[in-house]
Image 1 (cartoon, rainbow, N blue to C red):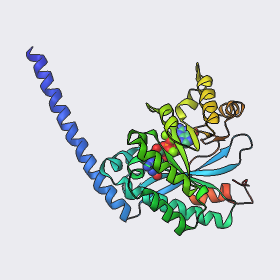
Image 2 (image 1 turned 135 degrees about the vertical axis):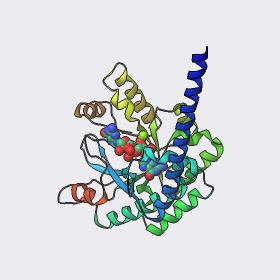
Image 3 (image 1 turned 30 degrees about the horizontal axis):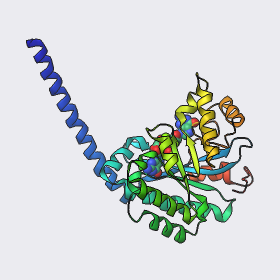
Length: 285
Ligand code: C2E
Ligand code: MG
Ligand code: MG
Ligand code: MG
């Protein structure tokens, strides 16, 4: 009895101190994140999205990294959640949109048109002036709206569905495309498709990973057919092996993204390996 109590107390103490450690780390991260924007410590990497049959790059997805002064390159999983909790994701998200559109305009002047996919946090998406500001960036950067694709996860749909549906319509009216990211991982993926108009569905990497396991192929086939029946394109995320790419082609999946084709890379490397007409050719969108 005494032992149990004693143990319980110790555990509580341990838990308490680790929680304190956690919140101190959280606070440091928060203030570092605040400075990171002013000091321009964020950067964007670009990962090609290709046609699976002919392996032509049709677009890229911009993926943020934080070049931290002492910690080195920090992955989004290690700071996006804190940025979301604190609201810093909104200014960070605008930096991403601005930077990616500027890059897109620069590439469009010299190369075949690409599309640019951007991950949009629901917090930023829900800002009342989100659509107007996107429109303003498109106009200022002089990019073709259809080159821009916004990747939204179903977390967005947890909010007032009428407001969300209206925002989706307004974005599509600009000519900007909407992609549903990480399809199949949330609680309400099907409900989401029923209520909202989406142009492209991205099959989450976990399904591609599990492709060769029991029922793996059937689930992917069903997702692809569902998307096509609803007039959506499909991108398979996280394609790492040639046999996965082959099976996806057989199943009618148009586009793929993954380490098999290319890892996320900086703009210079993308230019040298993918965009330069001497080393790579790009089809029209
Ligand atoms: P996501 O949008 O689903 O992005 C795909 C993630 O899978 C990226 O991780 C990418 O590097 C990784 N990936 C691509 N191909 C492969 C592959 O073949 N194998 C494996 N194992 N991984 C692959 P990353 O860059 O670490 O980004 C993680 C997540 O962070 C993203 O998932 C997205 O949800 C979020 N994120 C990234 N950039 C931004 C951003 O600018 N804004 C916001 N709000 N979120 C972002
Ligand atoms: Mg994404
Ligand atoms: Mg994804
Ligand atoms: Mg993901």
